[in-house]
Amino acid sequence: MLTIRPTTAEDLPVVYQFICDLEEEILPYEAFSRVFLHNLQSSDIKGWLAMVGSGENLQPAGFISVHLQHLLHHAALVAEVQELYVLAAYRGQAIGKLLLATATEWTVTKGCLEIEVTSNQVRKDAHRFYVREGYTNSHFKLTKKL
Image (cartoon, helix red, strand yellow):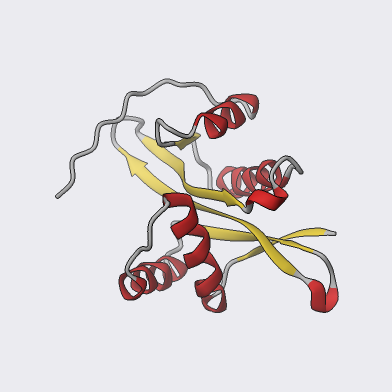
């Protein structure tokens, strides 16, 4: 059985592990905790966990977070998927698709013009997933470490 539920403060350890795995690095836990707890308080940021199993065997299998942004160049509210992660053992079972659909439904209720996602250039499987879900490669994103 698969269920999707909003994240809570109790989910911090599992979301931390998911994001460290996604980023392929150990992030500073205290800093991560501050950001995670801050995000939970924001009405413009929402996260969900995908849970598999039932009863005492309920296990987290995936996570998504979405941020809403009031963008001048769109003159509208726009959503952006910040993180989407599914445990390797559960990939290919439509969990990412369901997480993305849940996030998209929420952004529609918020009145967003569109939903965007940025994905690291090395994540070719993720790129194919987003294209299958109707996303197009319309931007070129540059970053600079500070």
